[in-house]
Every structure is written in structure tokens, then in C-alpha cells.
Amino acid sequence: MAIHSFPVIDIKNEVFKDQFEVAPNQELQLGGSKEWKISKRRLSGGVSNGIDLVEINNGRLSMTVIPTRGMGLWKGSCDNLRLGWDSPVENLVHPSLINPTLFNGIGWLKGFNELLCRCGISWHGAPGLDKVKDNSDNISETPLTLHGQIANTPAHRVDIHVETDGKGTLSVTGEVDETMLFGPRLRLKTRMETEAGSNWFRITDEIINIGGQTTESEILYHTNFGSPFLEGGSKLVAPVKEVTPCNDRSAKDMKTWTVYRDPVSGFIEQCHFLDIVADNNQETVVMLKNSTSDHAVSLSYNVKQLPSFTVWKNTQAVEDGYVTGLEPGTSLPNNRSFERSNGRIISLAPGESYQTGFTLTVLTSAEEVSETEAQIRELQSDTKPEIHQSPISKWTPGVE
Image 1 (tube, rainbow, N blue to C red):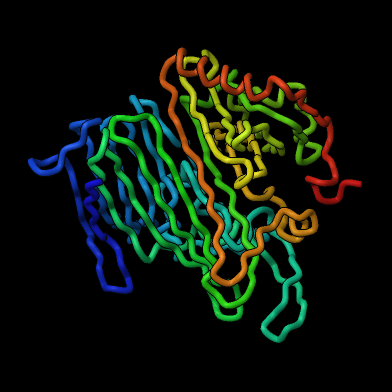
Image 2 (image 1 turned 90 degrees about the horizontal axis):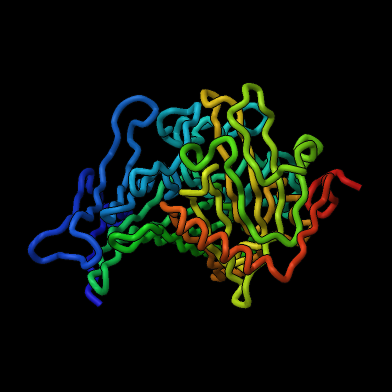
């Protein structure tokens, strides 16, 4: 296998390339496309000042990686179909400008506008108090903010890779550390890749405990979609064992929980928690399709790695953020104390790691949508879904 690698950020070795590009040339050709390119640049001005971006374009599908924001994905496109959404936060926000403690612990939302942001990796979910052991070996109450720290932590190493075998593979690898004295020492190592000329993008993550003590970890992939995949009549298609509303507000629409509305001013967000059916290899797929079923996005992943799934429906006015989130995770987006009490928190011994990830596929024809829907029906075929009409105690705090 011929692999061409290009370091663009390496803090340890004092490597930083403000601008970089690799594209087809006499010595570097890929079988899947003649129009591929990977480029790196740095933004200047306003709240985006100092943010690094790496754009991967495989000739058909493009994705913009944000090393400065935890190796998240800002936006993308495939066959002229946009991937992303219109957030009230119009521009990328540098992590130094985010105060996560604002508004009772939801300041994370001041920078929230990505196609994908990882939540975690020490904790994610709703803000609130957790009981943890402090540096004096005492149990104390500690406030945790919304969705953790990784999305507001810059990568200390980023490399670009081009592999020429087969159709050719384009990838970006990165490392992000979430560490502190007298606290967790976790490292996220990620590989984000696509095949030249394809309609898919894969993320493979490894969370490593680089400290000397056992520590906890959580991760949730907050993937967010607006138009053209989200519109009135769009539908979530998923193989379901069990589904429940996360609260009483979400329970009001259980008869139509898979269907999306047109934008509604003042709409109050809804969340539903799912237990997803998988095949014998623990692999599954979920899909969001538009109202006419001629384009869709799907997420494929392993339920052993990501046993929890959350659907976030936020169909308020476009100006206020018309969006839905499809969110596979190691746990549900409740406060860590509740998830711990229900056995959904990862425990990593010193040097131990946890592997996870998913593949995002853009379906650009009615035929592709139909094929994926048939795959989901096959997964569902032997399982009758249990649909709860109100929150249940194992998934929602405060329910008897």
C-alpha cells in the first residue's frame, strides 16, 4: 500500500502549516476520482480568528474538519446536497471565547453550529452536579456543564494522508487531549476518512486513558441535519427494540415520533431515547429521509460500541435553528451521575482504550433510499418495537 502522509500540526515537534494543499499531480493519482483534494487553512477575524480547518474533497463528497474544535465536522456536501444546518451561531467560534458555565451550565451552545460535534469525553449530557473524588480523596459535589469539553479543545496533532491503493483513500488523523492535574487524563485519537469518488465518510475513534489511575469516559456523536434532509414530512427510519420520550413534553407527540414538522416558531425541543436492533455482528443503520424519499443520510455503526441512541427534534423557526440530531453514544445525554447509577459509564484502567465510530452515507436517489429502508426493515423483521408513551425510570431521571 502506498501511503503519502503530511503533518500539518504537531505541537510537540513545533510543526505548524498555516496553509497546505495536496491534489492530483504527475506522481499522485487516485483511481476513484481525478478531482480530489485535501487542503488546510486558518481563519482570521471575528469569533473565528485562529480556527484551523481541513477540507477533504473526494471529488464527489466534501467534509470540513475543525482541528481547533475537537476534530469536529463543520459542514459538508455530496452531489450538491448540503450537509449541516443553519444555526443561530452563524460563524465558527474559537474555544477561547466559550464559557461553558454560562446560563446555568449551557454556555457550550454559544459555539454550537456543526454538522458533527463529539460530546464527552470525560462526560456529556445535561448540566448538573456529580459526586466525584477530589485530590484530597474526599467525595465532593462538582458541577458538570453541558456536553463536556472535547468539542472546545484544539487538537495538538493533525496529519493528512493519501493512500493510492484501489480507488484511493483520503484521510485526516488527529489527537486531542482532555487532561488536568488531579483529574482525568484522556486522549482522543481519530481517523476521518473517505474513498475517492464515494458518498460516505467514516470516523474511527479511540479514547485512551493516558493517566495512572482508572477513570470514567463517555462519548456521544451529535450529528445535526437541516434542509434538504430535514423538512415537513421527513422521517426517521430506524430498527427499534424500544423507544421512550425523554420527558413529558416529548411524550405529547409519541404517535408521530418518527415524523418531522415544518418549522414552527416557538417549538419546544423533543428528545427520544432508543434501543436499536442490530445484526449478528452487532452492526446497525438508521436513516433520515426527506419527505419525497429521494434523498437521505444514514449512520451505520456497532451497537456494542455505541449502545445508546438519542433523537433530538428541534423543528423551531429556521432563524432559531431548524435541526434534528441523530446521536449514537456510549450513554444517554443525562447527567453523568444518573448514567453511572444505571451502569452506562465506561471505566478505563491506566493504558486501556475504547474504540468506536460510525459511517455517514449520503443517499442521493430514490433507489438508494429504498435499498437502505429495506435493509432496516430486515433488521426490524424479527423484533416488535416496544413504544412507551411516557418516560421510563431506566432512561429518565426522576421517574418512578
